[in-house]
Amino acid sequence: MQTMIGVIGGSGVYQIDGLEGASWVKVKSPFGKPSDEVLVGRLDGVPMAFLPRHGRGHPLDPASVPYRANIDALKRLGCTEVVSVSAVGSLREDYAPGDFVIVEQYIDRTVSRAPSFFGPGCVAHVSLADPACTRLGAACATAARAAGQAVHTGATYIAIEGPQFSTRAESRLYRTWGADVIGMTGMPEARLAREAELCYACVAMVTDYDCWHDSHGAVDVAMVIRTLTANSDAARRLVARLPGLLGDSHAGCPQGCDHALDHAVMTSPDRRDPELVARLDAVAGRVL
Image (cartoon, rainbow, N blue to C red; front, side, top):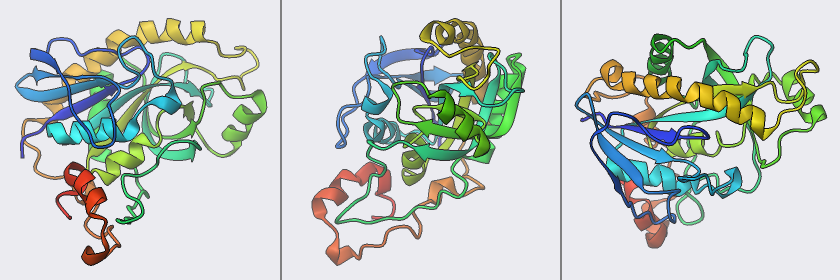
């Protein structure tokens, strides 16, 4: 299978440099309108697709991002792996602003977002014990180091609803839970990528110490933007190295990301809602 790398750019990352034959394309999804058109092209001969999570110009807040439509759109385009580039706050002293973090685990504290492509009429239970693709995460870590970034691996990301930043009490609580970084967009994006049988990895860019760190003060947007501006070039250099690391052939995921639905669908074929099944053609067509 041909490798196609999808990149979801978060705050501060709105494009991929150096794409050959680049063009913005509209992708229709039965789960609604994606955040924006998708920039498609080739980098070192490997097909790439870039989707700005918040839309160009950042009109969408974390709760209004159409996560299902975004993942569905990338799947429809033929993506085999998805790299999420996201801004986060640090809940650890040794994860400093400017560092990159490869996420391994998630704690989901979002409350208002559709968490699944499936539902009444076609029920599925996908394993999320290991929600990130370790192969793709390792490639991202290698690319980040080659881009000159300090990189941490094996991190736990706590996803909050937002759009406000945490209270000081919440920030301190999340540290006791073992969370390493905090953000507003990691979920349900990672859940949906697993349901869509996509290899998924999050490159989290630390912008601040949230508000738990007494000597650094409370986080504000100006602080976040200053660090994002400094990190955006490194993020683009990281992305530019991925085609060479991943190659142009996707032979299958050792972790089984591309077969996550093998035993997940519970609803018997004669009881499935035809309308929902039709909407799932890209996400779950392999098993439905």
